[in-house]
Structure formats: structure tokens, C-alpha cells
Amino acid sequence: MRTRIRHGLAAALTVSALSLTAACGGGEAKDDAKKDADKPAATTSAAPTSEAPATPLTAAQMKAAVLEVKDLPKGWKTTKHEESSTVYKVDKPACEPLAPMLGGDIAGATKGATGDFAVGNNDSEITQEVVTFDGTGAADYIKKLGSALDACPDFTTVADGNKMKISVKKITAPQGADEALAFQLSLEVAPGMKIEPNLIVVRQGTGVMRFLHLADAATAKKDFDTFAKLATDKFVKGAQS
Image 1 (tube, rainbow, N blue to C red):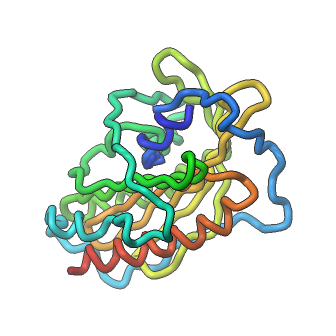
Image 2 (cartoon, rainbow, N blue to C red):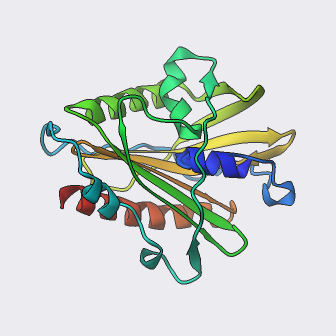
């Protein structure tokens, strides 16, 4: 189920995710059931430096806020962004803000630029999306998402008639933006088979970025920390340009 997830989240994982469409990619998805018990889960959220301005980001600002392949290490390539019309429904009302992480639009937001990248034979994948809001919409969205992360250690979603259980774990978010949330989604795509994308959702002024990274469990955390910081710094710079 990697493709749908990656482009819906951000993609979602969009993630997507945040990419972030999914098809159980045979041997590509690995059993990541073993958790990293050595590192405590945490979510960081920097205090806003000022009240959210009323003016949404421009298209130029949102384009400047997204990673380009030249920003990534050698070997990464741009991949095709696939639009998805899949609607994800969750079983708990408190978890509704997490549904857009699996595909679909963020209510009230205006879409901006996206970026999708992969290295090797899609051994590691990135998907990124920037949106903007009117007024305090971005800050309100981050607040709702933060509440959902606190209230939803797990939930069930139904998409295209398929039911899937998802576990949520907070992780450390990069610093540098007005607000940032980071978390891992653990999705059981087949009995005994899981994929675990890491995501950040970052706010700068009226803009919000969703960033999803999906990789082999052995390198996922280290690589995510590096790329999440890189994406956050460029997003903030673009939003302030």
C-alpha cells in the first residue's frame, strides 16, 4: 500500500502521505513490528513567534518552500506526483484531523506546491506538500492535529471499502518553525506486515507543510531527522520570502 500512503500523506504521508495510493508491494514492505524502546517518544512544538498573519502565502512562496532534487544527496530523483481521490474515514471523531495524513485535502486550506522523491529502487521515499490558510486557520489546524495526536494512539480507517488499523507514536520534531509536530504511523498492510512512515507537520505563519519519509527500518530514524530538518528550514525560508 506504499504508493497511496506516500502520495496522500504526504504522502502524505502526505503522507501523503503526506504524501502520502497504496498497493501492498510484495517484498518491499517489511515487518517493522519491533519498536525502538530505547528512545522515548516526544513531540515538540515551538511557541509561535507572533500571531498568525491574516495574509495567506502566495503561490511563489509555497513553491520556494518545497524541496528540489538538488537539495537532496546524490542518488535521489524526482518521482511523479499522483493525485488521489480516496476518502479516508476514521472510527473515532477525535482522530478526524489524522485522516488527511493518508490522502485527501485539508479542509479550509489552499493547495500549494508538492515534492516527491525516491532513491535507489524506491528504497527510501519522500513526499512533501505545502498549503496555506486565511487568518488563523493554520494555527487552528495545528492545534486540532496536536489534540488528535494526544487522543489517538491508534484508530481504524476505511478507504475504498478496505479497513486498516493504524497506530500513532509521537517523535521529536525539528526546531526552527513557528510550530512543529512529528509522529510515526504504523500501518498493518497485511497480516504480520507493517510499514511505518515518519511525518512532520510544520506551521510558519499562514502556511503548513506536510512531510513524509518512508524507508527501511534500519536507517529510517537517522535519515528522517536529517531530511525533516532540511525540509523545515527550506519551508520556513520560503514562507518568509
